[in-house]
Image (cartoon, rainbow, N blue to C red; front, side, top):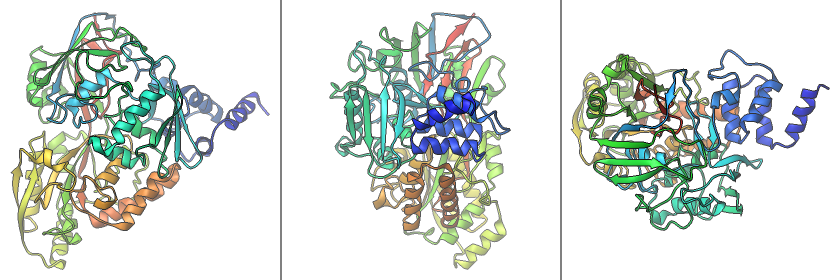
Length: 583
């Protein structure tokens, strides 16, 4: 037996069943290098451990999409950070970084970590707060406040070890008691937390979070979940860890609440913007900029205009529709991430003109998805197949036939359903390409005798999310969903039966078989098992078509070429810790 084999065997004796199964999957060639890194990070394998196992199992394969030759190279992380960017150009310390962000919604106006529900709020809290772990662009999980995590054999208990160096901006250590208080606040139904749906998806309820000791936290779930760490990562943007002493999260402003991130709030105006100064007690890599100014804008067009006019140095996110000029500007660095970000077109299943699934199928078949992607995104999107399983997810089964435009088949379905014409409203709200998408759906539907009156409602966004009052009066409607590292929230909140956890189920889709498959998918820590269940879910949703998923669009951010080292996530986090100006 070689020395490497002896070391590998010794290592494996210390790992749990799930971790060793992932190692076996990679060694047998059933998952590629990139998926091994992603799955290993979710299970809690450290980056050094993953690097060792990659070497022990031997080499790479043609599917390796990571930028580095080792797991550590892919992550490029420092303790407590998402990872500092690198550049060949000389850099200089200091200066004020000026950032353009969208004005937060009403719910996010105070940057209350419990209530924020949009990119505007995420842009604030991601500067000052940190999560137990961070969901990166390659869908792997990187350590942050937690240095490591592991589960029991059936993924019903997850234990996280905190980094002993982590501390809040007042200098006090981040302890297990702080984590328990933060999570218990978020899972408490009385607090109307925006994270409730995520924790329900993660099978974590009140009392499920406990402190093993000052540096160890245990999460006890009501049912297995193989990807639970995503639920306490940056994917769940409400879950930044705050001191246990915090009693009022609505006062997130200067001298109100301390957090553990690299920045502190100096001034905060919910209309104008936020000024950040470095956290003098930051436990990670010191920031280079001496100040940050995040200015709020009403829309992307205004952000782009300010960027081109030299008033800001960076844009948190922009759209192809309103930021085309940036895509070919030699003075602009565009950060582009493949993502699961999408629009959902719900079709009411319980009543109205789309209660017959053949009518829903017909409408879905009337859409030319490739043309929609080219027209709305200049090709910077992936085609959707009427399920939340985006191409970016490794559990998506690409063998499921892609739904294509087929007007003859669509008209035949309408005839079979005995429907010759439909007149109703399609509801949406003013957000990027959504009204244009509604117009494309309207034009396509006319070919089937379906007349859709477009209603761009000012109150649609706010009302859509209200449990029990989802999209009131809407037979068909469009709303947006942000990126997630795993599809569980989409599968549960948007599609599970309303009485089984479908709190955002605007289609009122209720299917016991589907509900059972989602529970099966979530509870299985095995990648092959998840893929097998995902295929069944994809096929079921293609047949039922409660929601049309036409596309998953790429996430775009921008900086001037004089700024380097900025990192983003498709969730809307904008990390400047590793950033600086070039000479």
